[in-house]
Image (cartoon, rainbow, N blue to C red; front, top):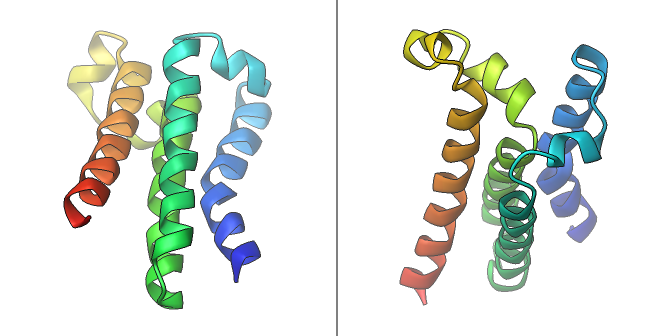
Length: 123
């Protein structure tokens, strides 16, 4: 059960790293270059949310559904270039000004902050 939860949490990051390395030839450390401190904090918060969910969610199906969201947010925070261009390519406003990476980063942070707020409120 725990192994499946970890795999679901890390799945979006595996996909992001694979796509980033194939399409953009970027390594993990190259993805961390821009906004490095904020990305490291985002990774820490995402892992913290995952651990909290893994400890406190008793129902197996709820746990598996819940752990993928912090993983998605973490991957949006880390892999801003590939996910920004893949998911937000149709967003003409962001594309015109070259803010696809910024938008993916912000969406990831909003997602992880939302997860933290939900955990705090549910306590």
